[in-house]
Image 1 (tube, helix red, strand yellow):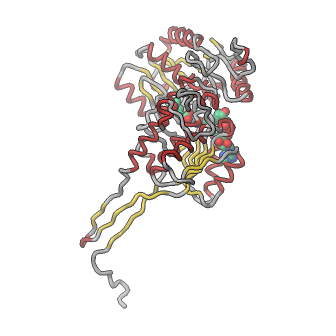
Image 2 (cartoon, rainbow, N blue to C red; image 1 turned 45 degrees about the vertical axis):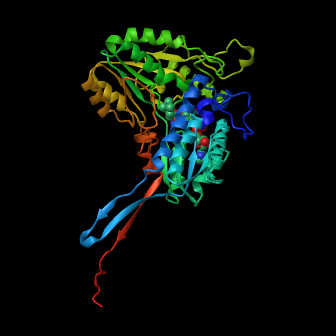
Image 3 (cartoon, rainbow, N blue to C red; image 1 turned 30 degrees about the horizontal axis):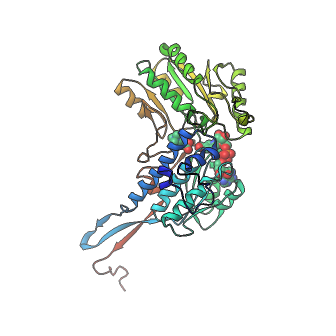
Length: 430
Ligand SMILES: NC(=O)C1=CN([C@@H]2O[C@H](COP(=O)(O)OP(=O)(O)OC[C@H]3O[C@@H](n4cnc5c(N)ncnc54)[C@H](O)[C@@H]3O)[C@@H](O)[C@H]2O)C=CC1
Ligand SMILES: C[N+](C)(C)CCCC(=O)O
């Protein structure tokens, strides 16, 4: 925890080469994932905040006392589920491991965590941190592997719960496997979230919000607001600003302080994202900037999986780039005229992870938030996720929540104890 906070090293770690105090988890996460060091630091901050938050909540877990007639009473106890499995995605490797294990351990469970094979390293660092903090052996375990390992964990009869972050197709398989022994399931799946920008917005904030909604972690974020609906009157000025700033994003060595966009996760994934851009062009979208493989000047970065962030104009709701999760730095922009129309279009998706609205009209903001079918609605910002605030999906984006007090309910079960203070009824008259 100390290391996460300030770069204080762990003497016992075999994985972290110690070169002073600044070789910290964030740096390792950059090497793990490819995101910029500036972002990785935020991820690690959010991670230790999650550990502290649930450590605090652990002492507050309580049941209810219910009085019954005749002096009898009942009480409820919040108890652990048992062994919980966490299966993580590669976009927020350390943070996901914390978001799952912190509430799990706070509720008295053990956790077996399987990171994505693309980002295997930092979950092991978390295990070392827990060990140093005094967590007994076996309470938090990291198992490495891919789909086969995940399948074994989900089918294991000794596992009480599976918490999964990843794609919708894998989430469906997890649910199916878990059904065999009635395991509880939390699913944090994909999205194609709408971001609605009204003409009365604070434009500067709306433009910044659109960048936040699309370009963090190279666009590989499940709750990204990739369908950007802009009220027609402000479309030209919005596009001008958003394109100007998108072009100015510094892409390159993610370990450098000035870099704001690093490399995508794999060559295959980069090709997939570039394929979405080609398909968008074929379907009539106009590339206003980016959407191409990018080669940084430094020779050592040649062959890296970089691409320039892309803004697509002339998009319509039926295009592939507007319907499917791209999971890369590609923003699709569409005009709208009325609130009623845009709400219908925004909700016309099988996903429901997040949503956003920019407006200065307070009534409109809350009305839109109420009517958007998504687990989160950001008003006048996007993609901020304080640990106190529940995060999770509607529709095929999943169910269950992470963060916030409510997550306790997803990692515990309620026992009712009924106490008779009088005689037992002679009901059978014998
Ligand atoms: N919602 C989100 O945060 C994420 C969404 N995705 C989406 O999924 C796409 C594919 O990325 P992947 O890493 O292949 O995601 P994925 O959903 O296949 O994998 C996520 C995790 O599940 C594990 N897994 C895969 N198949 C499994 C199975 N049958 N049983 C149990 N565990 C299994 C993986 O090893 C990994 O740890 C991305 O391009 C993106 O569109 C990917 C990562 C995160
Ligand atoms: C931290 N935040 C909100 C940008 C993304 C967290 C969800 C994810 O795992 O993609």
